[in-house]
Image (cartoon, rainbow, N blue to C red; front, side, top):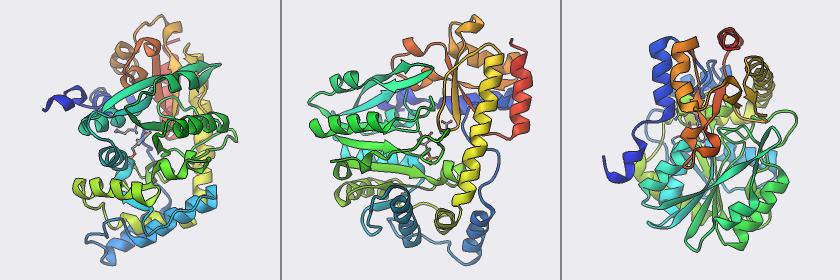
Length: 383
Ligand code: PMP
Ligand code: GLN
């Protein structure tokens, strides 16, 4: 392995899923749903295959999907992207993230991450021979907030790109409009590009709203917005995502993307387009179902003695193990499958500076109620 990839041997999700499988544990570690997406979307993919859509799609993605993505953003957020040159279909959000960093950041330039951060950001920065700097989220009541002063202080003359992720994996925080407005001002003042990972854009709870940072003043021209069908339509295995932005930035992302995968799986593209156009009600039901699952798991964790953090979005809720007499969440997560048959992931796996996160564990609640109830029975034995 080349030196720059050595720190990224295997992902925490792969490690914990393998442990869950080996021990027969209920897997609340890796975030993937255990039910299928909308039936009409599944049928559309089958029809696409039967109908002969089995060869390479156009480089930027099938027009029907690019148009559906642009129309969806326009309808939900009032922001206009031209499907011709401002929308790029990718192999999941993961490829969009990597291609954005590879296409826009020179070796040695800095990418500023807010930690905890989704693991692929740091690996993509390393692939680009760029440097990462980080600023931690700050505790805020039972949740987290962006430390705006620390964020600004972390910017150096070499900082090229800021990565924003809201709704946020792993904490489940949803950045407020005020937070995002201030982040946008900082990005403009320091002339930064912004990569915003919005894969959980529709999974927000308690009536909170998702604000795309690209809609804020001065941001369209400096922002690449990334999202994906994975979380919106329970289709993590379809690896169909996209990047949106001004044509010059999207062209740079495309230049990298074309030599990573050239194109993604063709038959998924019209199916995801169909879902974006016709399945808004299905997504609403998914959202309210997930909110109830968040409540269920939060209550169980609290009853089991964890200090549960608030989650306003995503698939995830974090909980502190310190009240259980535990001092190291990594050790806790390695032993939990053996002890009680539940798998989870330590938040320390998402940071460069573990100290403030040492006792925090992330649990995924995107599972059938019977699975969550089984996990509940097992977690209650900790109390
Ligand atoms: N970003 C975040 C914050 C995620 O949690 C994930 C995991 N699904 C991804 C990106 C990757 O998305 P995809 O599966 O579409 O590549
Ligand atoms: N995004 C998912 C999570 O955070 C997992 C994706 C992966 O396994 N790489 O759990």
